[in-house]
Amino acid sequence: MTPQQIELVKSTVPVLRENGVTLTSYFYKRMLNNNPDLKNVFNMDSQTSGRQPRALAAAVLAYAEHIENPAALAKAVERMATKHVSLDIQPDQYSIVGENLLHSISEVLDVPFESELIEAWKQAYLQLADILIGVEKQKYETLAAQQGGWAGWRSFEISNIETNEAGQLYTVTASDHQAIRPATAGQFVSVKVKVPGHDLHQPHQFVLTNNQEQQYQFLVKAEENRTEFSVANILLEHYTVGNQVELSAPLNK
Image 1: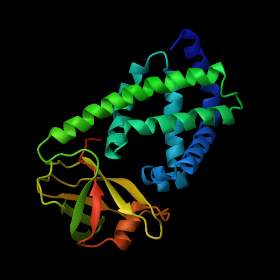
Image 2 (image 1 turned 120 degrees about the vertical axis):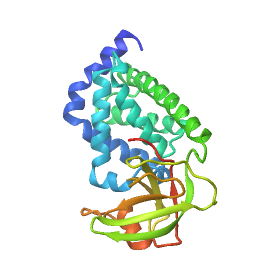
Image 3 (image 1 turned 60 degrees about the vertical axis):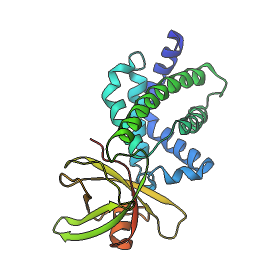
Image 4 (image 1 turned 90 degrees about the horizontal axis):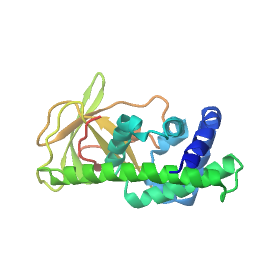
């Protein structure tokens, strides 16, 4: 990025502080309307509740504030990349996100798409996307190379459901009966389920409850402010022993 482009991105910080959630809410609506298949990737429960637009607004603001020194956001980048890997985010999806984000900035801020400001944000986005894609590539390769490991999604069968005072403990085993990567308590997996009444799958992260080698176990609690896309409630109400779910490989938070 040129010094001028850096200054242009920094000039949007006050607007992002004031209207960041408006921008990101518009962005998600635009992107998901234009690319409905991505509704299988982005948790629609988080969209409905506004959690995801708020989280993205905070991330965009932090990036703009540190655009001169992206290395200062190394921990945030690591967390973001880990979550992306748990959702099987692929490099080609970054171009879709970038296009819709740039158009959203242009439309919400009422700035011509061909302006220097949008070009500056384009370069800023490409810079961040390159960093994330590189980190995620390394994580995918590491997961796939481990004994019992895998990258992306893998089918598991619910082998047991145990009720306790905290919720329900779901135990799952690999549907292919092959070895799985050992996991430790506190790591998380993304679990993807079919949404009843919709041609849609939804992911959600669950924390593993103990050290596990031949199977994984995670606690599911009913969500109070539920929507029809709430994965926990879908599991509790529609999934039983013998049903199949998809899991990402265990990762550290």
